Length: 222
Image (cartoon, rainbow, N blue to C red; front, side, top):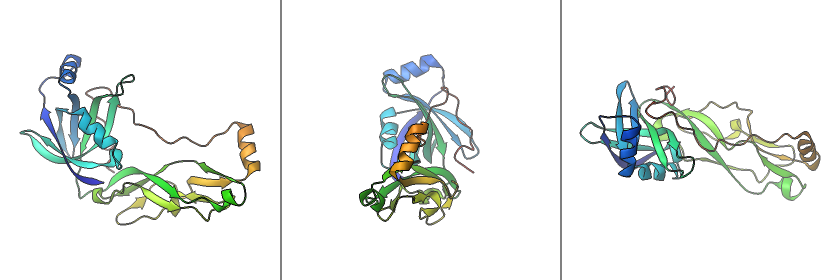
């Protein structure tokens, strides 16, 4: 989702661990800007500004403006980042230039509303299998999330990726029959517990690349 946010960055000439430490003393983090057929640019940027974007409602799908002083001003997305395992502060980030005229592949969260009838009236349980679907769309069409009503769902019924309502330039890439949530009866729930199988956990956070090594340019663009 495109937002009217501008983050200021500076190009940097030197690289390496010592330079990264010096930047962090100044409350800055090393990052790499790449994509759109242009050469990668090593930059320094405020980790607080990037973390604020990652923690926003649109998260890593946020498209914002990056103003690299004296070099370029371009729309970007945060496509990879590395966090300190103890302090959880940002150590490094990869920023991808975005061509607003070309489609991107993104994962978008699916939220549900309503209490299923299968839970209230039939004693079933609502199980969450995944929390997001993968779509392809133009940058300006990326939604913050999808919202689906599941109040009428009974035991044995499921909300699948193909049920999610898409609009604009969006095209579903996840399998249409991929289950997002479903209502299971007590017998099914007990069998699942006995077998030791559990629903797949949603992806929580992206793992960053090694410092100074940007991800491939095709990561978000297809």
